[in-house]
Amino acid sequence: MAGIGLRSLRQIPRNPGLRLPTARLLDDDISGNPQDAEVRNLGRAIVDDFATIRSKYQTPKHPIVLAHGLLGFNELHLAGASLPGIHYWRGIAEAMSNNGIEVITTSVPASSSIEERAAKLSTDIESKAGGKHVNIIAGLDSRHMLSKLKPPNVRVKSLTTIASPHRGSAFADYVFDQIGPTNLPKLYSALGKMHVQTGAFRQLTRRYMHEEFNPNTPDREGVR
Image (cartoon, rainbow, N blue to C red):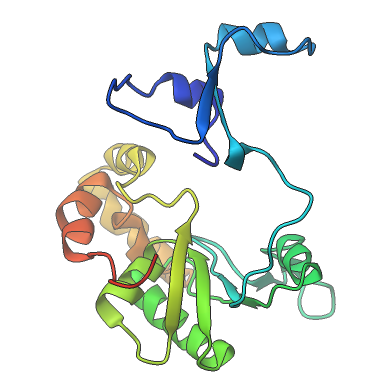
């Protein structure tokens, strides 16, 4: 459960049939650290082998593709090409490379539709991977690419998503409700004049993900 904090774990309903083979629940065996009282107030902590950061990991055999999400970028130049740019994956790509991992970074339109972003992602991987098998760290764009586009020259072993809104975003629903159907076309028109694509925004809603995207985007067989 990478990325889920103790408070989030407390909200998971109890399931007597749930089995966590590598996990253990800690009650009274918390050591004497200063924050122990605070930790105890949150309830029982789930600890497993994956919660421990190791000093060394086995190097993947295949390249890792880092694909940014909504409003992301590969390298951003705020003051033109004369000054160094801001790297989206700063530190992460370097750390992987220093550990012998071949890293491929991609760049897709920041707020275009999932379909448009997936097409660009496919082109980037195809041109940079050179036919190699890859492991992708990405989100909804990759799911569409694998499930619907199925590019023959993009060979994917696994897809890992981090904080992707697979069930939609409650915050997106709230924003759309606050804007209202009357003002939404005006907002889109204003953003269009600033050359900001808007295709991705509606696709963040829970209704879109539940009724359209997920039912029409099955997992790709052979991709973990």
